[in-house]
Image (tube, rainbow, N blue to C red; front, side):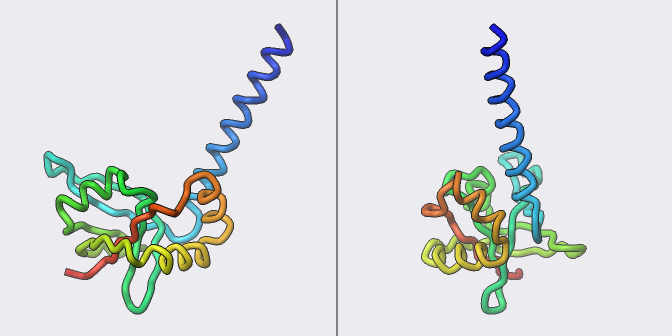
Length: 133
């Protein structure tokens, strides 16, 4: 019985450690707040990484079924808070930019991007171009 409790304790500890590292990784570096509207037009906030490429800001959905991405596809006019500035932008899903944006995210976020990417594939990530409106 003690061994079972020990094994369960170790597994629980490892699980908690994994969640803690993932949370730390997700919040490392520059994180923006994206506001999309739900069905009741209530703002929903999502914290995401951001990169710049050729004068444009980009964010990325980890997969096509991400709730915030589905809301953006219904209403692409969103708000983004970057630092102390809140901007009105139009989010444009741009899957053809996946390889380039994944590379820029990997370069900017380093170990954190590699850690999260180890558990969650970037093969179906959806880059979002942010255009000022």
